[in-house]
Length: 131
Image (cartoon, rainbow, N blue to C red; front, top):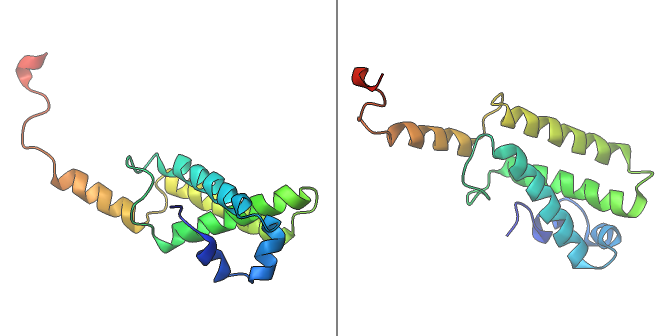
C-alpha cells in the first residue's frame, strides 16, 4: 500500500476529474503514487532507516498526493501543467528537503530518534586502552 491511494484522491477531487487524469486506467494512478512514494522515501532515508513507513502521518499522505497529481498532469499535458499543481509539487519537494535536512520534524521521526536513544546500551563505546 502507498502513502496515498484512490480513496485519498477521491476525498480531494471528483471521480470524473481523476478519470481524466488517469485516462480511465487505474494503473496510471498506481504508477504515479508508486513514483511519488519512492521520491518521498528517498528524502526520508536521511532521517528514517525503516522504509516504507508503516504508520503514515497525514502530511506524508498529502505530499504523496501532491507529487502524484503533478506526475499525472505531467504525463498528459507535460508542456502546460497547471500552475497550482506545479506550485504544490515544488512546495512538497521543498518540504521534503527540509525533512531530509532535519529542519522539519514529523511525528514518526521524533519517535524513531527517541527509541534509538532509549534503546541504547550502557556499554562504553570507547575506552582508554583502545588507543
